[in-house]
Image (cartoon, rainbow, N blue to C red; front, side):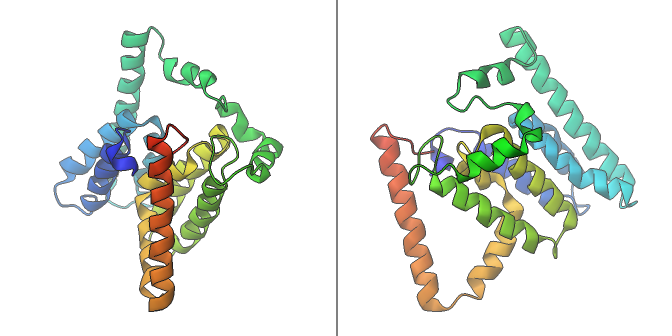
Length: 226
């Protein structure tokens, strides 16, 4: 449901797919353009720089990897310039986070006890601070990251950073929405579904549809649906 509400996930998903699809040498300018726009669309996109960075360290198509690294950093810098010109401060986006219910902060990355406390702080099926769905998605995402290692270790590291950092800094607020843009997780999930027996697959689909219906109904009733 996140794709039609108006968040940036739809654009980010498209750009991420372009980066992965054209990183094999076909139309490399599209991959570099996507790299530039990814960190500009969502600041967390800068963590995808891990993919070309590891490629460069391993000596895999270094010119292409270097171009993607520069594109990621350039997009990130443009983001800060836009914040500075429009809002008067390059970190205005981070300052606005203080107004959110969880008051996200990068300081929480080093506060492991706070992270563990927020993980077990389940208060309802889905709400801003104690959502069971968000924490369930976190556990499922880590399972996917472990399985993803067999395909692409670089994708694994990038996905880990993209999901772990928001979970820690945001205390799981809207975490299930963040997983939408973690495209590499579709590979282990697809493998699991292909090996699932038909009756269990039907149950899986019905459960997923019920979760979507619940979130949509929450959204239209002015509840917490993200």
